[in-house]
Image (cartoon, rainbow, N blue to C red; front, side, top):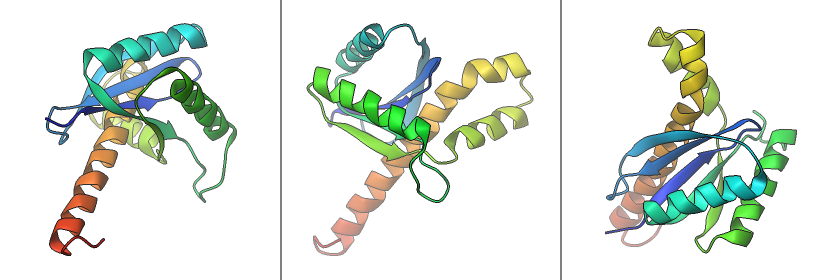
Length: 151
């Protein structure tokens, strides 16, 4: 059974979390973490990673639409570095352009109240981020399989 992947939608007030299923096919949202202190936030993530036997962590990288660095992408990079320093599993940055906008669009379509959308948006963003990553990995592996080992 492959290790699971944990996705983090990094925010200044909240951190959205999602974990892959045991087959690495689908993403499931976890309760949103209300930020307190960096040390406590990382300790919570470490506990979640241990609980779900996580092998890789991806941190959403909110780069600009043109692929440029933003102030939030610098903060996400800093957070990912802190995780790398304190955890043993690999931590990768993953392009999260438009995941928050897509999450908000989906939640509006579901006709949730503004307060319910605010409560769910970080978790839904983390799920979208992780599903994008899992789909990318599956596509990469299928291309390798069909090209005789070449990608």
